[in-house]
Image (cartoon, rainbow, N blue to C red; front, top):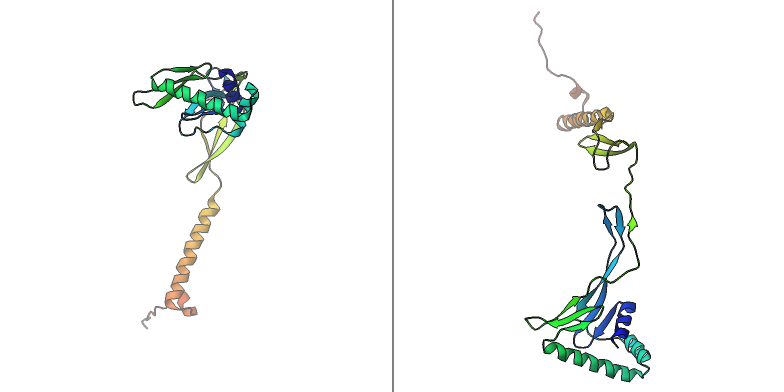
Length: 210
């Protein structure tokens, strides 16, 4: 009957064992293999979680159909199977689940799970070739300068070409800053001395000898 349990696990990605925990199918995302110039497909492996052990109703319906019995009989059969499994583990027996992994008790008395390995998949690696765009540019801001980097067809993908610094015509920015400073000085002068036409010139009197 283990084959039916394995089939359910592969279809529904998890199966719970009362009093023990749940075996899950965990997905590992696709990865890039630069050395072999390919993209590896997603992979799957079994994982055990001891903190959840309650099967759902859907599982017992599936089990009843597989054994051609009533749902309540399927519940009874599965609980007895799980009880026998727990007893075998308590006696330090290693329980092998073909194609899934092994359950056993460690030195601290906890139940541990050792997966049998990656789950076989029909997906194959996809070739991946690095594309080098010829005569492309991108701009970077370095301080107050914009730096342009160019990549030519003769260069490798990992090498940067000689950096060409192009300084934008930014004189008007400096002119605006100077003008703003000058206006601030004039404003504070009139603010402190009053807004009078006489304050715009030099008011010092010079006596001329006759």
